[in-house]
Image (cartoon, rainbow, N blue to C red):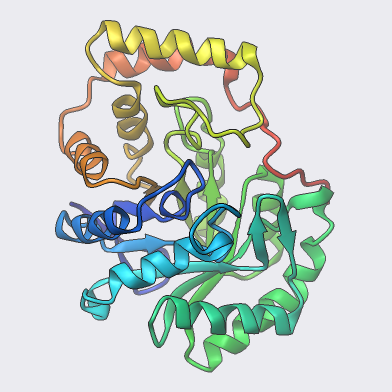
Length: 320
C-alpha cells in the first residue's frame, strides 16, 4: 500500500481509503460481525484511513442513521489509534430522507456525539456533509456557523483538521475560491464517467486545500450489481453502463477492477475512498490495485461510457 500526505496537514493516508457508508447499510443490509472483520482486514492490508458519517445508515439498519459510526467505532477499538486516520462528518443528520442542521451548536453537539460513537478522544478530520442540498439552501449557514463551530472544535483539540464534502463542482469551486478549509471530499468526480475533479487540482493546490476522491465505482453504478435504489439514474443510462460491463466480461475483467484502477491512477490525488462490507470484497479490491493496469482496455471502457461523460446526477442540487 502506498501512502501520501494529505495536503498541508501532517496526515499520512493510504492511497486507498475505507469509506464506511457501506457498513452503515447505504448499499444494502449488512452484518455487523462481518463488517468489523472487514475493518480489521482493511487495516491488516495497509489501509489506515477510515471515513464515516452520522448519516450513513438506513432506517432499517441496526442503529438507523448512526449505524456506520457505531460499527466503525467498535471495529477500530482494538487498533492502535496513532496508526489510523479517522474522518467523519457533521450537519447531515439522516440520509434517507436527508435531514440537515448546520447551526453552530448543532455541529458542536454532532461532533461530541461522534467522538463517543467512534470511541476516540479526537477526530483527525471533520467535514460539513452535503452542503449543496435543496438548491444550496444550507450553504451560507454551513460556511458561516458550521465552519465557526469546526474552528472552535479544532482550537479545543477535539478535531485536528476540517473541511466540506459534496458533489456539485460549482460548490467545490466556490469553497476553494472563497473559504479556508483543510480539505474537500468530493464524490463521483474521478471515475470512468467523470473527470471534473482533475480540473480543480490547480486551484486547490494554490489554496493548499487537499482534494479527497470518493466513489470510484460511481456509488455503485459502475458495478455488476448496479446502483442502490436511491441512485438518480435512467434506464437509458443503465443500458450504456451494461454495454461497458458486458465488454469487460468478454475480456475476462470485471468492470469494478477497471473502475478502481482508473480512479487511483492520478498521483495528484492523495487518497480515494471506496466502500465494501465483506472481507472477500475488501481483499479483491486491494489485490486489483496491486496488479498491472491494462491501459488499452481502460481506454476502450472509457470510450464506451462516453455518453455519460461528466453528466450531472442530481445527488443534491446546488444553485448558489
